[in-house]
Length: 428
Ligand SMILES: Cc1cc2nc3c(=O)[nH]c(=O)nc-3n(C[C@H](O)[C@H](O)[C@H](O)COP(=O)(O)OP(=O)(O)OC[C@H]3O[C@@H](n4cnc5c(N)ncnc54)[C@H](O)[C@@H]3O)c2cc1C
Picture 1 (cartoon, rainbow, N blue to C red):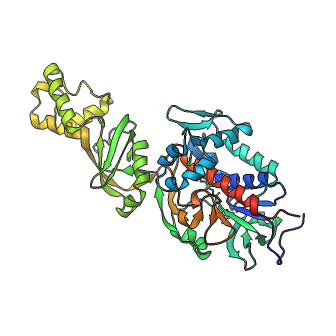
Picture 2: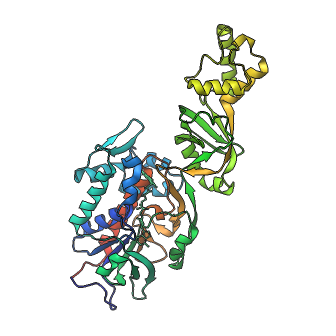
């Protein structure tokens, strides 16, 4: 096959940068929609789909059972509102169908997360690799695009490095380029996109857990509750969900949601602040006081520490009781009003001094990237550089945990690939 490196008319090939979820989806969508089209998929590392492979604890949380685009967008701290139309074009049902057509059946867990029935991310990686192979995508690992130049006559010149580039030489000229290079919390990692004429929403990490070195809960690693509320004191940030006490602090969906929606603010605060935990989020000050009054009347002779309430784990309940200054043997009718009030306060607002963060091992993403107002969200084409498209985490889109980040990668990759297939010149 002749190489598409002609210096004359706009070159015909398409290059996709980044062999991750968005890059594979984009390359496959383009090649399937236009079988005549020569599509290169360039991945700088030796391993293709590396994040897919480690995702979801090795199970790959592919998407999330959401019935409508309107429901789906609510799970994106950045990008959701703008992506509503894109999700209508290619949403959760399309993802399920796409994988089913390629022999991969997804199942839904009780919390809405969707995984392959094999519970193995390898199933997803193989389906993507097979589909790319069948569609004729030329996949090159160990091939990095180090420099990209927009050509005056249209199209792009890519300066390549890495062993894989030996197959096509040090320069690749293409008519259209899909950038799906993923997120990166370092601002300098986006300099090459700035050089192409884009601005960058400053990248900061999202989806992290809180470090609480002096936590009153430090003796309780592994203890979890099904529903807690986490509030960042002094801020308008509060989220509910399961909460897990870790060796370093606190984690679990409630904390991760707060870290995602508050990613920028927490970055400004240097990841320092007071997190207030309500272990009884369905209660207010008034209703909890009323509960205590009634409970004490009926159960005055019961030892406080010995009878955990609200379904809280025994160790947690005992820790809160001790923190309130109530002795291990004390009975409800012996507890002074001050100590009882302290217990109620701890149930509603246990203060944890957050000092730093730990990146969530199961899923972390970058908040920031290519601003969405610089992209046509139907074709994912840059509004600044003709022929340049974006997909996946390189865009200023990120979701909370639960399969939302992959869904954004599938959606944006698919729309970009289809749009490129429509306009790119087929190889003659
Ligand atoms: C441990 C972990 C687990 C996760 N689990 C889940 C999950 O279960 N569900 C979910 O929805 N989300 C999950 N996520 C988030 C999800 O993996 C990402 O949002 C998603 O992979 C983004 O896809 P992408 O294709 O945009 O980027 P990436 O997957 O990061 O792929 C980008 C690729 O581009 C390559 N690249 C970069 N620069 C160049 C260049 N110049 N030339 C060539 N190649 C280049 C990179 O090497 C990389 O392979 C997880 C994330 C992590 C870190």
